[in-house]
Length: 108
Image 1 (spheres, rainbow, N blue to C red):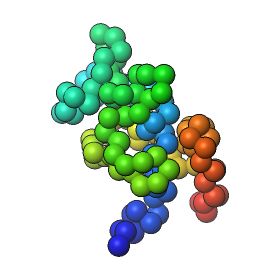
Image 2: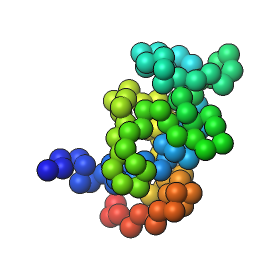
Image 3: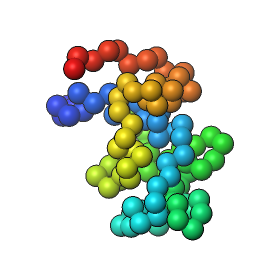
Image 4: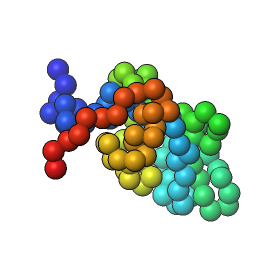
């Protein structure tokens, strides 16, 4: 049975943002993450492995986009991952890229 957090979080059935954009950040923010999940953009910028490609797909994402997904480093995810919010412009752009419908409006 899903937890209350999963019921309130449409991200566990989506993951489109994790497979639509390069996730880049200052290299020090990646300290503590498994090296296999990090890529290098330049001397100061790192990215999540798999996201610096024409068809990005974060190596930390498990499951099928648009079905049931999870992030293997959710508690340690870098700031760009935390900035995307369900239903915001980047979320909707990623969902569109994967052929997913917009999220229903949520009460504030």
